[in-house]
Length: 344
Ligand code: DOR
Ligand code: ZN
Image 1 (cartoon, rainbow, N blue to C red):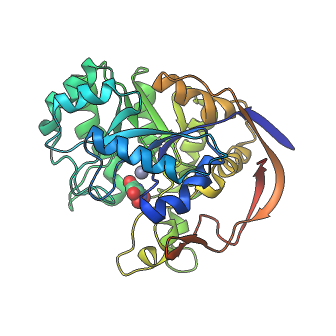
Image 2: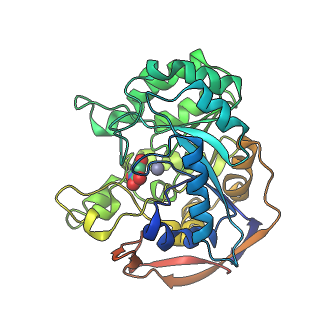
């Protein structure tokens, strides 16, 4: 395979940050994707419609004017979110989902939901308005092993939400385990899953290869190789139920290379190419377009993009670092070769 042309993909899970950091990263995504579901975990969180709409304006203002890119906004659920917030969001053409961060699960999740019971009336409203729920599917609590958090979330929380709100559309985001794949496949079309490029490409060894490597630390944490193989199989053969969501999560180099380093891997500079490298490992390209460009719009009930993109077999070297406001960030595969290149 020397080149592949597909419908222009969308990124169904993205962190864009704000201000200088937003300016530094947004055009990497805009040159790859037509649209992206933008995560609301800013400080303070994007918890109300007016905040989402003004964040959207800031994103658009930071875009290279030659790019057409549409940010799809989300609301951050808190214990204080009301059914009225949901009704308002569901009526906005710009807000497409609500995000559930279990409090303490990840970066800027302190304002998240402390117990699922606190948002039961909100979930009922979301089901009623057919408004999608996006879940960071990890249980919290010091007693739960970090490698088991996704499975415990399925058993204790997600299965309960599915049981009590069977018509609620849910995206189980950035799944990392065979357990999550099996669970999505055991459910009907109301549940979909996103898979990141980095979870398709690295297993947990990458965090410790040749010493501790904080640039491979993200949440959910990368799991053992058997899980990565299961993710590759799901993306390449079960694409109607799974779709691309990069979870590209920029952090300044100093915040990563720190005694208490932040979780997050930056992949926006080469997202489509990284997914291509993952598919290439299996030799099975038959569902590449489905996974990258078709299953996401189907789940979100949005039109498929009209434009196409082409990637070519061509080696290029990822920069060692890229500017990030007053600082720099270290992109995924920094200083290494990627063997696919997107035509710009
Ligand atoms: O690795 C991660 N980084 N996982 C998340 O859930 C949040 C994200 C971030 O915002 O940095
Ligand atoms: Zn994320």
